[in-house]
Length: 232
Image 1: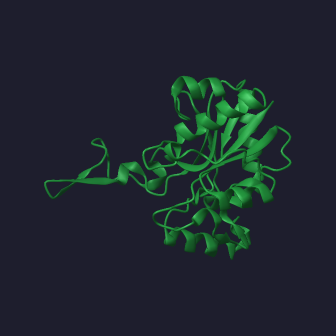
Image 2: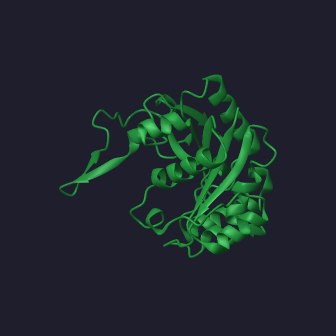
Image 3: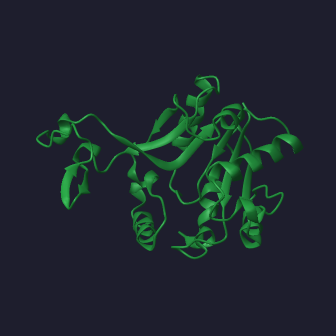
């Protein structure tokens, strides 16, 4: 099986300036996503798509393929993840060769494990590369206990919520953790998304794998977790 690992990394970030090259645990944030897939036999290349020369230089230094600087129209606030991903996929299949799967690795979720990656790839292969595999974690706040505000009054977010249920009586709920998106080229082009109606869950019980760094608080939490290696 041939899988292209893709890391999308813009140069600018609104909440954390230059976060993709900011040092976390002694190495740039983006490097965590490059190094974790090295040596996996099914990964044929690690392609970094970026609009930033410094990110490109650092990524090349750690063994990633950076064949071009991403066009501005694919790096602005309007461009979607799909737009950037399909641009990279089309280039790779036209210039290098066909692949069986595209694995999107967000640099903001640095603590995904090799074990989880291999589990996800096996799940994708078991279903003959026909169904997307998406990284998931147990929801910290159960949707049955979430509320919305209407006319200044609290209303259950789910109308049928039974607020008297104990946590152990609730159906397990999961959220997308951002650590793993694996899809076939055909599915991505057809659905124009990494998500589909029959996507498969890759569940990680290790909450460190669900850390998605978007704010300074998230960064502080990531550094705290690094201080307790047993949590990784």
